[in-house]
Length: 158
Image (cartoon, rainbow, N blue to C red; front, side, top):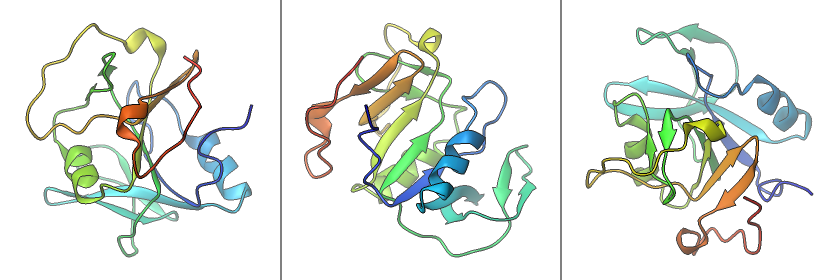
């Protein structure tokens, strides 16, 4: 079955760090399909979506794009360390993705994880932005109640 995100044209895709789900093959497939791919770059307390291209290692140890202008992405593939059944995620604690997603409410928020990263519940703060969908090796879970304007109707495999 085709991905429910395949019709989208622009994607923010992170460069995997430590134990995060690898994204190199995803980036290659998106580029081969003619999709716009952007990578995150942290500037101060803000995460920017810069065009795919040359990268460098940031002070945080993550490969980030060197140059380009911030742009809107229809889909953001979001890294995580853990997730719960309600679509909340735990990251490395900087809040960069939460702030990015809050600034871009029309962006579909898709977490990439391993099924073993599931936990029963996570602590939450007011600024935490939940996922719209979660992709693991076991399938795709859509949190349909969150997809009002970004509807991916009828696709829930997990």
